[in-house]
Amino acid sequence: MGMKCWFLVYTDADTPEVLRRPPSIDIAATDTLVRGLFGPCRFLSDSNLLQSADPRDGQVAAACFDGVTVLATESVGVGPLDLDLRFHSAAQGRTMYLFGLHSVSGWGSFGWWDPDGHLVRGFGGSDDGGLSENLGPALPFEAAVDSYERYDGGSWPSPPALVEEALADRLGFRFEGIPVPDGPEPSSIPLRTYR
Image (cartoon, rainbow, N blue to C red; front, side, top):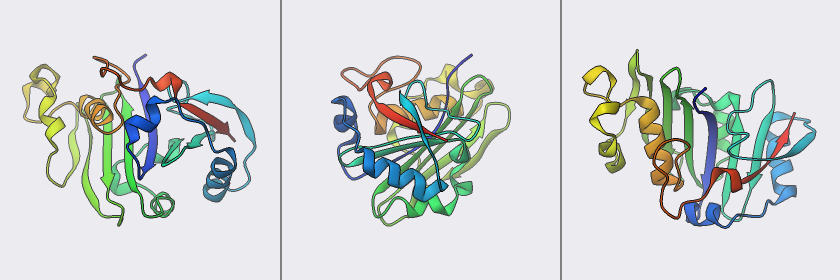
């Protein structure tokens, strides 16, 4: 089955530390964010980032915490250059990260924008198609992807492996692979789901 995710993180805090707590959701701010981006939506249920990292069928999962916002929607399951501008506007002067992953199909995408909205690093692609986006200088964590995870012995790391390393570096956890010591558990990061 593998792991699938497509979500954004807006942050102006020590993100792994906020997510490790586990954090309390600001329900009013979360409702406002979701309805501001998607129009009238109704709350469906409480969830968490492990269960709702890849919402489909028009669902959205989100949570606003103190200094960190998580927003999961199929609409952000794209490469950095294809991210809709409305999601950039929602950053409101904070750092923004994009994480997209489908480990079975070998697809992955990661984006990092600074608080001024400039793309610092972006990559996207698939194991069979190579990297379709490779923007900005490679980050130190990219060198940590083992050679066995490189596509067909090629020169680029597997995009899903790169996304898992980006998650570990920026959020302090991996969905699959070696757990990050003392990192947050995705199942303990609460989200609210909407449609």
